[in-house]
Length: 218
Image 1 (cartoon, rainbow, N blue to C red):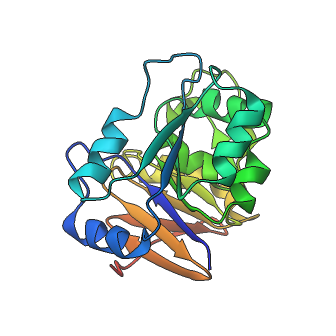
Image 2: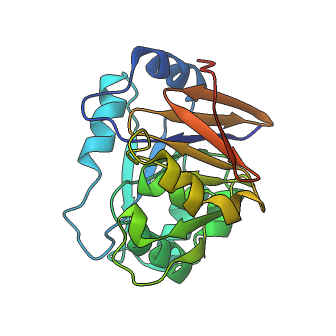
Image 3: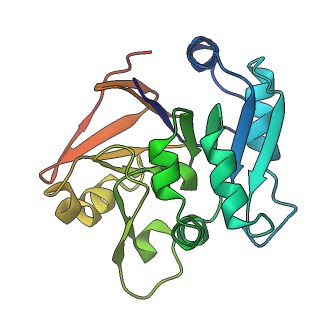
C-alpha cells in the first residue's frame, strides 16, 4: 500500500499530530532521497525539509540529493533504493523541467518508498497543475503542466487561499471538471494511503467548479 504526503510549508516544524503519523509510517530509514527544485544550484540542499524530519526524530542512514550535479543513471538508482523520496519546495517550474529532463516520474511511481513533497514538490507530485500568473508564476499566459501523477488529482499547495478564494475557484474551475483539485495553505497536509485520504489543516476540495472545506482526519 503506497503512502504519499502532499505538504504545504512549515515555518517552524511539523505539527505533533503529523510527527506522530510520520514516525509510524516511516519504518524503513535507510535512505532519504531529496529531489531539488533548483537543480542547477548545488547549495540548495533541502536543509529546511531535513530539519522538519530531524525534529520529528526521523533520521536516516544515508542522505542523497538529486540535481544536475548527479548523473541521470545514478539518480534512477538512488530512487530505486530509497526509503523515502522527498520532492523539495521552491521553484515548481524548474523542478518540473528537471523531473521531465531526467525522466524521474516513472522511477518515483515505481518506487516502494514513501513519497513526500513540500509546496512546489507537492504540486509536482500531482497528476496535473495550473501554471498561472495569478498563482505567482512569471508567465504571460496560463498553461497546464503534467506532474509525476502519483494520484489522479491536482494539488495547489502553500497558497494564500483565505484571501483569494474566488480567484482560486475561478482559476481552477476548468481543471476541476477533469479531476479533483485539493487546495491548501502553508501549514497543511494531505496524505494518501492506498485509497484513503487524510487531512490536516485548512484543505479545500474543488470539484466541478464547486468548493468545500474538508474536515481534518489526523
